[in-house]
Length: 214
Image (cartoon, rainbow, N blue to C red; front, top):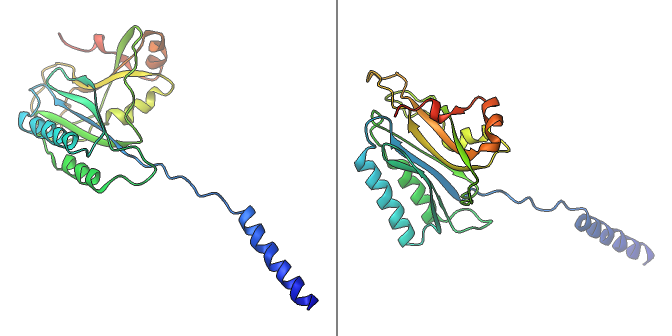
């Protein structure tokens, strides 16, 4: 009888220990938002693709597929840099949102006139009250006929510790021969506080005003 009691106490102790020392479940970061950038690379933005994108976003807003649509800036040749966001949750994005993402991926602007990129992010950055700002830029490395430039979101990581108040892809306005593989002259441009200018310059960015052709 005593052996049975001891055995029962031993098993109970194991169960209690497993509960006390069990690792907490990890919270998986779910990317519920999409950064979107579209614009022209000298010629104006592909109008058909641009209208298709705006119609797609409008339908998503109207049908409650997305809860947030933020435009951070507009390109000189048309288009914008924006963000859309699903309902915030610690669960995977809704099926409707995933369908919406596939529809975004299906848009194919003419690469000889336009750039277009989408990238998943955790959440849309809030619009902030701007201090006195200056625009800094760096080439996105894109080539004509290839939609391969670095996205605004990826390059912004190089501005680590610097608040960005607006971002857009813009052309430097220089004339270039239209040839596949040639440089596009597209830059990722960021509005930052004047106080952070030197840090950005040290990171390889330049003032946009020194590059753009009026």
